[in-house]
Length: 204
Image 1: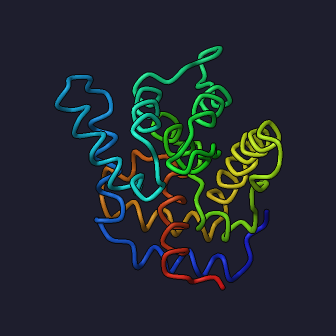
Image 2: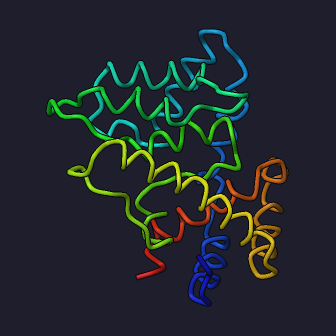
Image 3: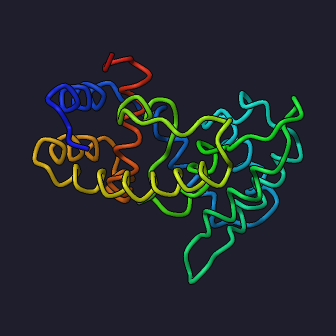
């Protein structure tokens, strides 16, 4: 995807209106994740749930427990997180309505905690990129494959955008807000900005 002038302007506006409350919880999560004591894990789980609004997803305790089990000990294949396996594990757990769903947004946030070059997916990203995953009537395998392809293409796009002069200038300005942001991958910084673009409805 190529960014339009409207996209650049929206990202610049988002950077000027991004506050510490928009990214500091994420920085706290990064600091907590390596600690495996019960207090740190409990604090991480509480903060992660609040920051990424897991409670509004209608998730069951079974899903919640499995989700954090996978987050704290992600399965790996050839040294890389096995995203497909995570999808398969979580998509077979029924919600409160007794049906199964594909928790794409939640999985993207799980993976993103371990790999900052992997973009977050949510409704704001969907609108910014102009993409939409296959609906619930489509086969689950097809939907999972779509999500895996999204990770690949979106990562490539974000990395390419970050090298463009206009975007690089925006990111540099953002990094000056907090020294901890200089240690975040450009993909994660773009996640923050795209979320702000969406929450402020800057692109209609």
